[in-house]
Amino acid sequence: MKIHAGHCYAIGKRRQPINRDEARRLLDAGLRACSHCTPDTLLDIPLPSCPALAAAAR
Image (tube, rainbow, N blue to C red; front, side, top):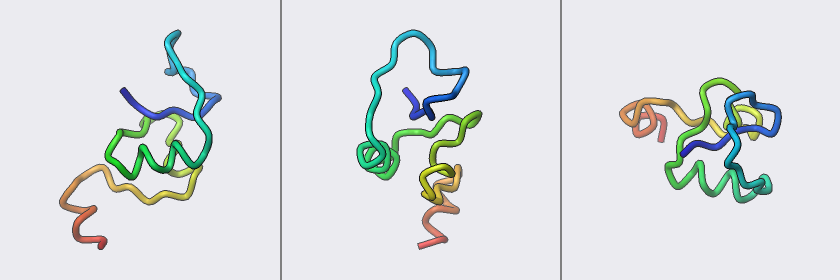
């Protein structure tokens, strides 16, 4: 399961729209962002793909 932006071609048929706050909460909780549409970038959430980088950034 990944978070996608509304315009992403990789969403698929099973989807559930969420608001920006919910997307931010889910991304912060560790749900992965789609690497094609990069919703984390659209929401200004800097989430390095490597956990070691994320720990070093804090």
